[in-house]
Length: 282
Image (cartoon, rainbow, N blue to C red; front, side):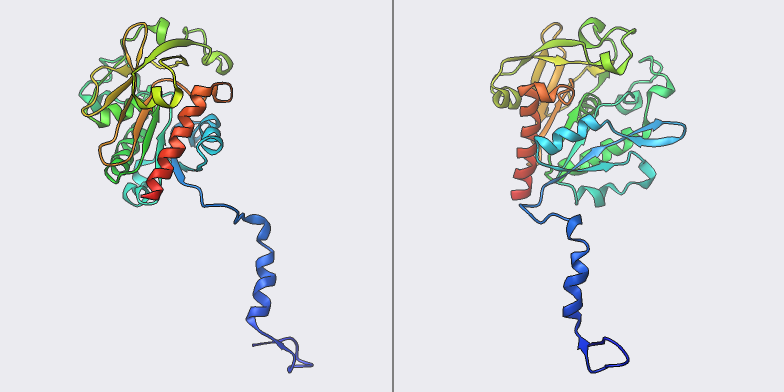
């Protein structure tokens, strides 16, 4: 019991009287309505903006909230600061995003000089965190998804290789199209594999997709199932797997870019939400 004052020590109040008033101060800071949303990790990149920073484009985050119904946790790509075992046990899923960097050739048995990659085109910490965290998540039966670089990372994780000898006219914009506003203007067609996850969820056999990449799949990783091929040259544009009970799904294109105007892109992120929900219900 707590005395209200020295003049009248007989007037007292209990902690139960005080606690509700204190809690009212924080009522506006929380929402207790509805079920707890699944938490998906979104891997950052190492960038320089006057100083080293962790970065991820907002366009990757918003569709996960709106269409997947998830809560997003940004994961720093700092290998020395990352306890992937602890984090993998707390996340319901993981998205490996696109990035301006390439996967280092050493990860799949090539030298970066052979692939024409300059040091500033690499992000070695991102490689390390992506491979280790995704591996732990997959082994734990948690769903993992990839977009652009994320597809390439997952292909390497499954033992595949990459190439940079792509048909530029089909897979990326011209060298002059460097402005962010026009970077994603380039589109090309992909054919979806009948009965696959993407064909089923979109109810389509082909899509016109936004494409910005300089690396692509050379040899497909072991155990991966092709979901989409480029119509023009047969490059693998999407794959899926389910090795340990959780979905693995990755696309080479950028569904997050035009998601508000594309039913197929919305379906992709809705599929992520269903995979996260299935994982939590097990």
